[in-house]
Image (cartoon, rainbow, N blue to C red):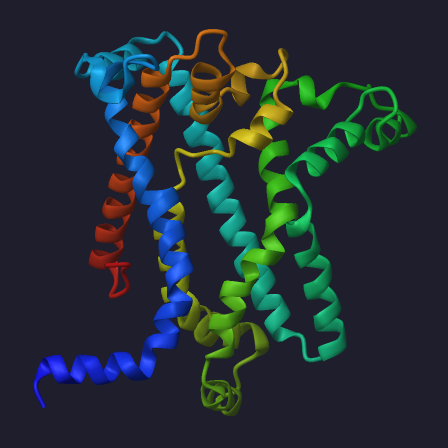
Length: 306
């Protein structure tokens, strides 16, 4: 049987699977790959009336404009500071939570803990920020009243620039840490029970088994997760940051994504080419970070994404 006959027979047997794949494939092509055609306006002075091809070609003008912007490095610094902080703490909390849940032997208690920690993931960002605003309200918020009760000075914490990275990161951890444990719990279920039995025979305690059996077993998953997360270092969520942003804390909450939104959508005279150029630069740098992190992980260990 030649290759063509083999492929035809294979297709006859598996065509329902390809049919199920078709909607997802159409979605990806339509909404992920097709819009990449519009990235060319990053190199043009795009005018709606002239269209993409009819607009004037300006080369790297918009990229130069961004790097010459007086707050450019503040935007990049805020983005990196919040993003790296979020990735580091989020991964650490998720891994610890997964290891602790894996140690629980009471199935009912474990199910309750999983449900409670998973539920915040399904809360809308808008609802979450609304709750946070009420919680931190300087006049009637729960935290403000607690501080007053303890004899402290009441302050608007959401108006303090230095507090905003912590508020952003820890609220994100509350919302997503439980959901992120799914990946690590799945990896922990694949750990061979014979390794634990051998460790118990050798006199290893529970903590020692976590250190020498569980953590090495999920290390490939941790590395892959780190590589994937590095691709989002420059893309701090614009929606949540915009909702948290006000005139008092703008110095630390103005990041690349909010600046792109302001220039490309919210402005009275939107600069589509300028916003697209920043977005394209962001994507290129994110890809470079993924490749660089992958190569570093490959050299330090055997696990890598590609």
